[in-house]
Image (cartoon, rainbow, N blue to C red; front, side):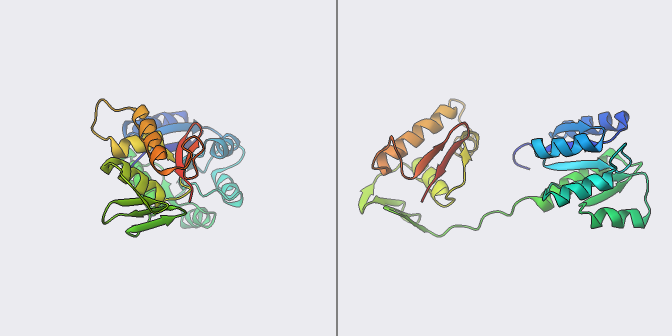
Length: 231
């Protein structure tokens, strides 16, 4: 499912926390845990997990109240509610408060994993629309069909990899691409490549398309993260 997803598991039963946490880690997820509602809200606010597995019967704030407060705060983190109560009214309460799914205890770990993956698929961002074959951004023009690039009307020679990297960034202006993402996309199977390869290619692109490579107009560095294209 792409980059590793982080799951927050909230339950005051330490045996369930351990069993669910181990099962999720075996499936490749990162896991955080909490045993009460206040801690869950703090972790959700600070760590921003990709999904929360939330027990209803918590001490203090119960799971329904935690879910309600999350939604009132504007958080869209997907929530899978766990409850020993399987009555329809309890399920309706959970869904009305903004839960994405509801699983009654006792449950099988296999079903829990299946539901987690289904929720993550449903809530994943939609893939961006396929861009047009031509990009015009200020003094830069790119034509995908001919692999032609011009700056101020002057042809610029790019290698195939340079063109693909610039095209990706130019068709997603403002989006920050981490060095890890660029590495995985453009050097997927090259053992000798590392993140310094990304730095080298960005420098080459700046030298070819920027008026002042040391103070670029288009290929901007986002310190500590990666790079983005500014139109």
